[in-house]
Amino acid sequence: MDNRKVVIIGDGMVGSTIAYTLMMKDYVNEIVIIDIVKEKVEGDVLDMMHGVSFVSPKLIKAGTYEDIKDAHIVIITAGVAQKQGETRLDLLKRNIKIFDSILDQVKPHLEPDALILVVSNPVDVLSYYTYKKLQIEPSRVIGSGTVLDSSRLRFLISEEADVDPRNVHSYVIGEHGDSEVSAFSVANIGQIPLKEYLINTKGPKGIEILKTLHEKVKNAAYEIIQKKGATYYAIGLATSKIVGTILNNTRSILTVSTYVENEFNGEIDGVYISLPCVVGNKGVIERLHLEYSYDEVLKLIQSANTLKTTYRDLNI
Image (cartoon, rainbow, N blue to C red):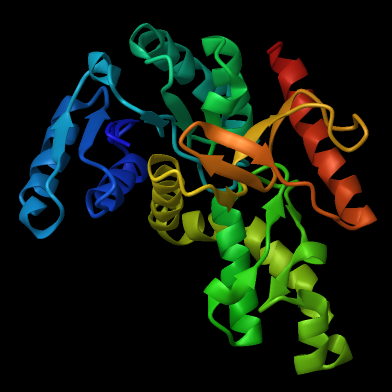
């Protein structure tokens, strides 16, 4: 693609880490950062530009909403930080107000083929809100969803199995939050079903660790927030993976949050939720339909209903 310009709205720990991560990639040639605290952005830009001789040449600048013109991807990370003990859904009412202001300023400058990547939490609801407010094709609004959660799960499984995490294939689906579902039924290591692999290597009790792994994934952000105040390194890497997939049109399979209609016999309809999707330069190209276990499907439907209840409460 000729156009490799990315605009990041929000220069907190997540936004600045995403900018730094993208700076080190050769598939981006321009990064624009927007934040109400302009001096912070200017400082970050100077800091990064001083190291630009060590990476592929690119422009990094502190910008305004007018710089969204010609951008292929607009990443929204702005919002108030998640507090210790606060759920992602607790953040919603505070962040909706922030998104109202942001989206009103984004819309006049958004190119017809530009994509919006929402990273702010609660990401599924804010992705849905972005789609509704901008009134654009849902394939053009993507949430970072459970891309990070799936990576966390692969890492934890790789530790238990003592294998390279890149050889672990597993998905976390549903809400990026407390109702998310670890889809162990479709997970595998080196093409061997996960449960079979664990039984072969650890005996009949091998699969008993799966519940513990799910709880660790679900509570990972809370643990990190308790220890250091915020999560930003891994989400920076997850976001750069999504951006690279779009700009390079690699058609990677990612569990991004996307608009789902009439799935699972109509039980999931009209909701942004994470499922394995083929992602390319037009956004979400197609969604994969995997054979999840009956229990996982029930939990996934419950996760979707949790999100829809939030929509109704907010009248969106």
